[in-house]
Image (cartoon, rainbow, N blue to C red; front, side, top):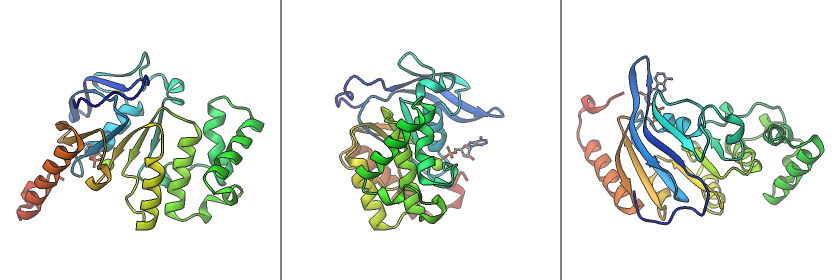
Length: 248
Ligand SMILES: Nc1ncnc2c1ncn2[C@@H]1O[C@H](COP(=O)(O)OP(=O)(O)O)[C@@H](O)[C@H]1O
Ligand SMILES: [Mg+2]
């Protein structure tokens, strides 16, 4: 683990020999990690286990071996406590959005957190105004573009003010200006971010980068050297013509 300072006093997820298997096939194994830094990147090839890792950290799945904890909580069983602690932004906004209008979508998490109807409606109005999107309030979500729906999902996460935000390839499928805007929005967030990306350039200045391969940590440290090693390895693999190398 790198020696950059932990992020304030906010509890970070702790994994102890954590693993996840489906039908006795291991997808993640032997994870010993204390995720305390403020900006943490996750890199790895397709199928290496990155998305499963985020789901495990968020408590959307429980480890089949070892433990995952956040402070005194077990994320997979203490869902209510996670509402204010961990937010997750999925790669595909259409897996996340469940309501017909922007206002309803944004109010949902706040209502789950126990806010009453009037207060949540006001919080949604304020949130949209802060992000220059007041005109979205009564919009149908289907009237938004993919990039806009993605941003709506981020707003839904931000509305709940979680201490840690997990993001699964948030830039994939967005056009360049939308990517740049999202990158600026993310950079300005005070929260801890744990970000999966295919584009290691996004991780410049990150406190820590974890490279996952075959469901295990292959490398873990400061962004510079880890990204450099990963990029070199991907270039090396790209230079071979062996499909036999691909695991899936
Ligand atoms: N619920 C599941 N059942 C069976 N296999 C799964 C399940 N979830 C993930 N996998 C498999 O685990 C591996 C890692 O998947 P994933 O975490 O999505 O990787 P990544 O996000 O790095 O592309 C893949 O081979 C995937 O097919
Ligand atoms: Mg994935």
